[in-house]
Amino acid sequence: RDPTSKFKRGIKRDISVFPTLKQDKQWDVWQRAIFAQARAQDLIKVLTASYVPVIPADRSLFQEKQKYMYAVF
Image (tube, rainbow, N blue to C red):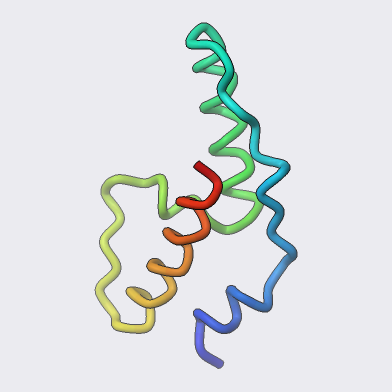
């Protein structure tokens, strides 16, 4: 099975569970919550600056994950 289609059919991803940053003083709490939700929804590689997909299937999957996180932000 293609990893991209597996991602799309995987767990239900819900943008509404990601917190909204309302004030700068909430940055630390907001950042921890964003990373926790990203891990839970299998999106943590998008937030990892050092991750570079090598295999074409991984690139396609990473692009789908980026699209989703872009919608979150």
